[in-house]
Image 1 (tube, rainbow, N blue to C red):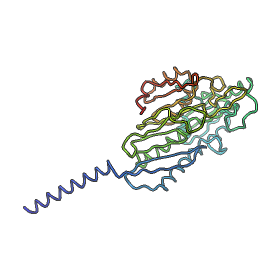
Image 2: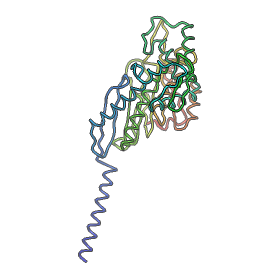
Image 3: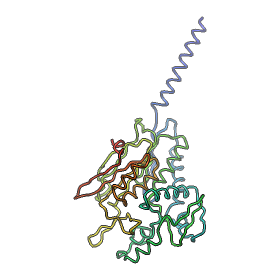
Image 4: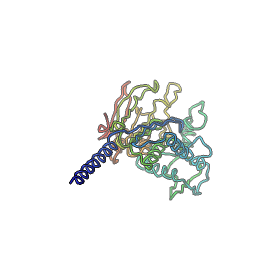
Length: 344
């Protein structure tokens, strides 16, 4: 009888211990780790939560190695990068693609199609012509003939994307995927953490973000959309957004521009006209399941008619947007049907 009683006590203690361990694993003693560094001409910042002890040095190395791989594929400033080698490649000859480059191009083709060409990864000749690319800025504005010549060397439809192969239909077609490179970098890091068992993290590269799981307080990650002011980085927040397993990217023309003879010229080039956009849109933010999509679509919305852009986003699954216009020195915002669900 005494042994049975003692056995019951031990069983109860075991149950209590299991419950306490389960409670601890799900409710407490989580540690937040922070990693920072430079990449893609900007900075990155990562926060991740783990119940188990992690090596910050090991994770820093993993992150830097993965970002180095992405840069080796997509950097326009590295003449030996994969994209630079493709740009130097002849027409009508298939170019073998790495897994990263192939995945980016699949997303690129999708963006080109759904935006009806408002996003186009072949606008490099136009970007260079207007002085926003890798070449030296011109002293004078481009002439009409120069713009038409550059337009003749653009068009994502002039590329053939097959199974890990890319072919130029015409000579002179060059890729510049800078408008989605940071977003892809965010997605690459998100996959790195997820595949290694880390489910709660916030990854940011140059303002493009992905929030997965919960923060240390067991709430969705909270981020901000900056006011689209030209005065500098510390201009305050326009909206505060909650990210629950979603990404957000913002594009704007209020910091990267030049002024000539009283006219402002934005770095956002309309792929159809060859000119910098002249609408009143100053900032667009897109929330989507992956940051590559959010990054590219945010750029496309800078080009598109506002209502057409809103209609497009409303038709896309798991995608929302905020478009900010400046009218008479005031900001006027238009948003997709369910964007408010993410606003704090």
